[in-house]
Length: 330
Image (cartoon, rainbow, N blue to C red; front, top):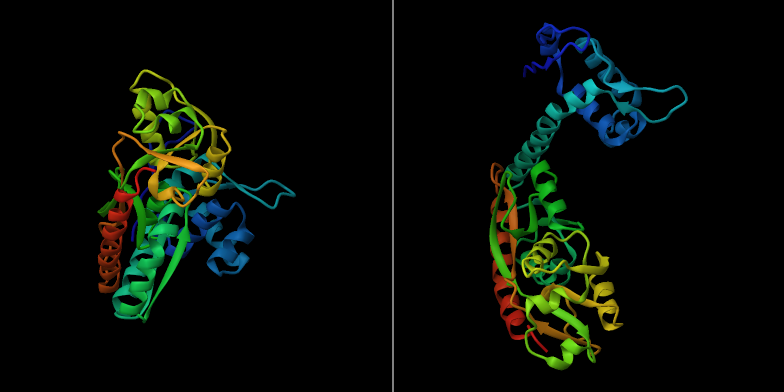
């Protein structure tokens, strides 16, 4: 592999120069060491992450700096951490996609070789993890006993998609429409937005489906990192009101507890709600439901077991969607 990088000479007005032929001698180990130091901020932590010796990581980075003729890291005296130089930041932008694709290629080859054994890595966020995932894992385990499923909990679907893009997981639960990127997915279910409020609140006593303009006038409670929450906020702004969120959390239970306590009105997807809670009233809204999907990298190999996991997830979520439709209001 040849890597040719153009770096402008900061000391003259000459045209950008092509770096020496030594660039062709870059090794993947050198690039991975450089990326690990940049990610972890120290040579020691990078060595631990890569399972290299610290001296090997130092030698890899020194060889890159020698070939490029620039410093990639600032190494202050007495400091255990290092910081990227401007040249280092430029190189990192090129190295990151190379390292991510190598990691994805490695996982693909392992999956291909493993066949009916091996591992599927899945990123999942809280509401799906609590309501849908247990049944999916149970059915999949019976159908594919030789496959291990490794779960990573993320705070939002954005974080899960980033892991798919980096090749850190094979699958991630997300929300449609998908952002720009190397993603494909299948819709699993539609999760209606609801209002959760204390039993004696004006909205609860009025009953029915409150107008979006009325919801926008309330003191609101919601999630901090949820992409669908940001979408719902935009729909409320379209009514001519600026939503006032008095509390945000990543925890479903805390959001519902604050609504029960009367701190405000929670505007949340129904899948995040404990519908058995006798202290709250759950009201439907006119907002379009969030569309939950299972997402993968479009350029990566999908093993038969990964395809089976997707099919089982669709079956489980069809039944869950029917339950959500019946319980949208109380």
